[in-house]
Structures are given as structure tokens and as C-alpha cells.
Image 1 (cartoon, helix red, strand yellow):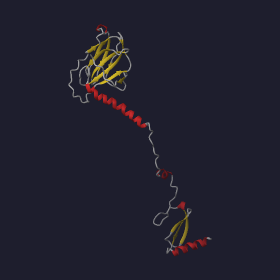
Image 2: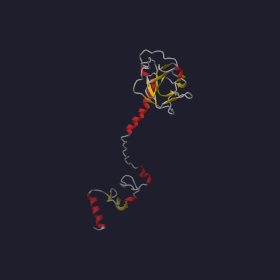
Image 3: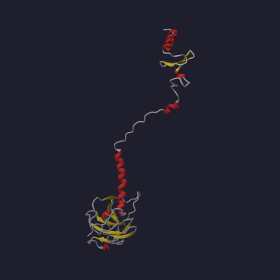
Length: 245
């Protein structure tokens, strides 16, 4: 079909549809846009469309630059957490909550309705009857924080109790002890309930990790002010302290 035949068929189609000149525009496939105005027909490549308005072109230029491409909506990738992340978060929470709970116990925030006894004066001791006081030639300095404390030394081999020293809250004393290498355990709390129940619900019980060495020339001590930079590490005992007879 020639060009004149094609134009004739289009004009005939418009007349049958009752459409006048200047009212109709359409796209010829994907390559051209044609519009009629006052009986004139012209073809404009789609890529050069610039006039937009009532009855304007159906498409604008396809490539509108780098800035436009950056602002186009693109779905964000779905980020799925690694299965181990929940355990990492749980362990992180535990490392914060457990020390906070134990500090609350030591400071007396745990309800305790039992009758309180007078805590022994700082520097008082309970000593194994087999220990000769004259052999206590070494020294054990103890500094307390906001809780009363009982600092104990045990034989490393037999776990036999050697000495327990009582130190009131926010105090410091130096206790004479026999020379030797011992396992140190620390009992802390608020209200004193005696040498069997110790501090009742507020009792905390820990063991110093490394052995404590006492010689005639040098002693070993403990400062119970907790700090992230502390060098004397302890572990929590899950059992209750043994009663002092």
C-alpha cells in the first residue's frame, strides 16, 4: 500500500468515526507519534516529544538523565538476620543483667522480712581451731564497697576452712593470716542473719579465680569495688556458703 493510500484509509476511518481534523492523535506502533491539526498531518519521532498538555503526546522522552534514574523506585533487598544473631543478643543481655541483679542483691534491694542481727565489727575473724594464732605473720588487706563482706580462705588441697574475716560496708582493714597458698571466697550482702544463713536473700557468693599467695614478706588482698578494669577475677558459686561453726 502506498503512502497516499494509507493516508486515504486513515481519513476514511476518521470520517466514519465522526472525528474532525485537529481532534485526534495516536501512536503509530513505537516509532512515530502523529497528530492532526486543522487538517494537517505530521509525524514526530517519539524520542523528541516536548509538548505536553491537553491532548498532548502520550509519552515523554525515555531517557531523562542520571538524576532521574537514581530517584526511580527500586525494591530494597530483604535482609534476613543470621540465626546466630539472636543468641549473640541473648548472651549480651545476660552479661549485663546478671551483674546488675547481683549488685541489687548485695545492696539490699531484694525484700528480706527476716530478723536482722548485728554484723560483727570490721576486723573480727572466725579461725579454724587447728590454727595457731602465732603463725599469722602475713597480711590480708580488705576494702569493701556498699555491702557487708565475709572474706574466707580455704586450703587448696583439702578445701578446709582456715579463716573468715568480717568487714563492714565501706570500710577497709588488714587481717593477719598464716603464710600459705589459699583459695579465697567472698560472701557479701545487706542484712546479717548469722553464721549459718549469712545475709539471707541478699547473699552473694563468689570464688576468686587465681590462688592467693601469702608469705612472711608479702600478703594478698582484695578490693570489692567492682570495675571493668579490675584484675582480681571471680566466678559465681551456685551453691550456698558452708555454715561457720
